[in-house]
Length: 258
Image (cartoon, rainbow, N blue to C red; front, top):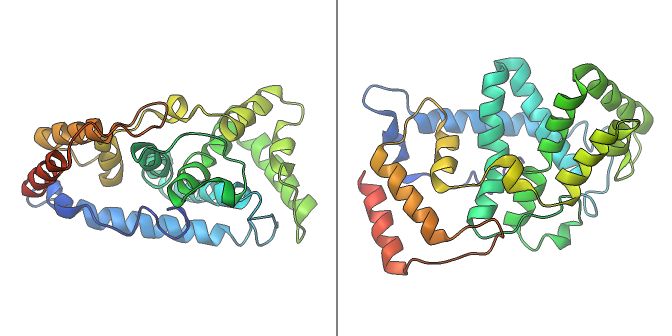
């Protein structure tokens, strides 16, 4: 699924986050869960095309079908709910995987690699589900809908009920378009995630889950920024750990009391 192969970000809860909607308002947790269910369903349906209709080697190049299924789910949201909602879900359901990986100390890196080369579920989710789909989104924006989707249909026609090569689609998109070839290298082979997706923070992650209509109380925002400092995430991806276990427990008790 979009959330790291079965819901790496979807299995827990946000504690007392449901109270953040305010008295008389809609429950942001219920809205979040509904949006996740709809997005995950769209992602899994997209697998009927990738890698159902068009096969790929999911062990050696897992990004080929998973990142494309993620992108396809965002397209579904755009068609059904409009571009604003699509941007919201791209942050909440896609980029959040990358931000969670970085906040946990994981390093950015190449998206196109074998499953065994990721070294763990968070890295796999962060890069394959969280970073890779944005190559397609940026390529679509750069090429325009017409050329982009014609190339995608050509990819399907050429590989229907076959196993596509690992670079078939990126090569087709980049054919005669050097800027798209450079875009593919940047997103799939290099490490520019923090620059391209924004440096992660706990406050941004929580705000992305709850959606733009829910304002974080100032005290919660400040607390989350403090937690981010204790996690010690940086652009190199190395965990810092500047806070003690007692400090973290105190911060979590304060968070539960809001």
